[in-house]
Amino acid sequence: MKRYYRYVVAVCCLMVCSCAYTKEIKIREEFDQSVKGYNKMLRWRDMESAGIIYMDPELRDAFMKTAQDIKKRGVTITGYRILTTEYTPEKNSAEVVAEFDYYALPSNRIKTLTYRQNWSYLDTEEKKGWQLKSGLPAFE
Image 1 (cartoon, rainbow, N blue to C red):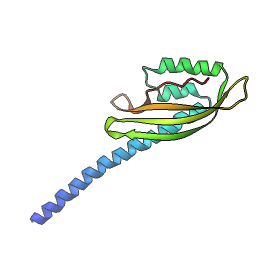
Image 2 (cartoon, rainbow, N blue to C red):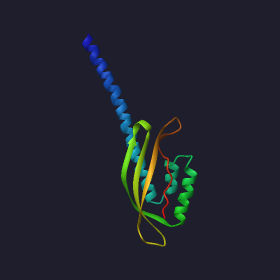
Image 3 (tube, rainbow, N blue to C red):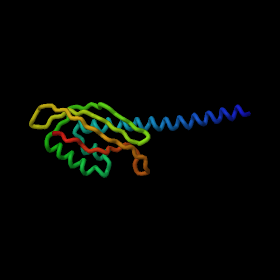
Image 4 (cartoon, rainbow, N blue to C red):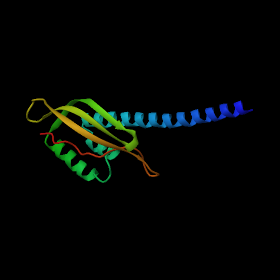
């Protein structure tokens, strides 16, 4: 009979551990999707939507102002690469370093810019998901 209880306890422990691990994987997958979605929106000149979907509400107005300025100056992003991602599960945060290739009219010279993005995971009743905590870089 004792042996039976040991097996039950062992199975329960495994189930609890696997649920925690599964949640961690899900949060990481959401992070990867958010990073790809955000950077893809910037690449395709949809900065306003990127700001509404991914930006921290407290920083959204400044983000939108910068996005409008970038569009007025004729900046076009031609490509991007994710260089590094550093995910810190215990802090519910992550940092991404991306590289953007762009040009600003009337010049046709391609420039490269490194863009450091700080992300934070929210798990509240109102919102669940990743939010960007850093604004747009200066495309000069």
